Image 1 (tube, one colour):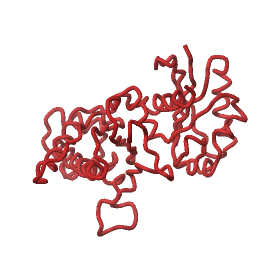
Image 2 (cartoon, one colour; image 1 turned 90 degrees about the vertical axis):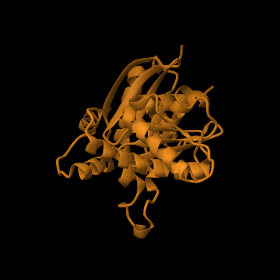
Image 3 (cartoon, rainbow, N blue to C red; image 1 turned 60 degrees about the horizontal axis):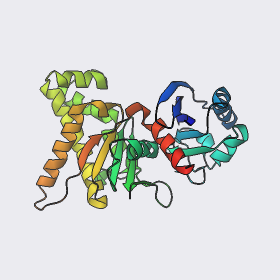
Length: 297
């Protein structure tokens, strides 16, 4: 059975795993992401390649930025500015002479759901990743839709208030990232106390009505933007990812608010089903592998 080195490059760490083609994760760990130079980045990946070179058939990479996966080219690299306008695959292959693929992190998460997860049975849909910001991806004809310029589904940039159209204060990523959730709950509790996402959901699951109200407001704002995406794109399902997608209460409240929005339309429109992403913290790794296996059939 074939084995692959899969990498999830983030702003602070490169998560990596040795994964078989049947998705069995043999081992998994992480190393710090070099933030200074491209040479150090290439060498960090090169050392992982050296560790597994005799075992693997390829390297599959999830990374931030606007990426052309077919050409292996990074137009941007998120916080990793040294990746901008880079022939990333060719650069890495000089150090790691093996088949390599790269893909945008949110689009890799969607690939995981298309290939092996909760979106295997759809043609058209979307993935929304709730983290510090909002990751996103559109799925068209059972494939990740990259767009002509490889930036389709960049939900972070969606504006939520036409009165303040300049800056990030009204961007979807600001309103409904994790920071937005904490702010909604603090408003309901009328406190400046700093709570974590874990603490919030523990309080909600114990029946704290004010906390539930704050989460519900957060869910309503997510549902509103999912409604807008659906009206444009006609989704069969929308998968919610990120750490808090593991909370059944959040999925339930997003679906409830989305159904209420549709109910007030006054005419019949398909209601997309809201589902959690299956792979959660491993989604980028699994999705990068799926993309790699499709590329090198």
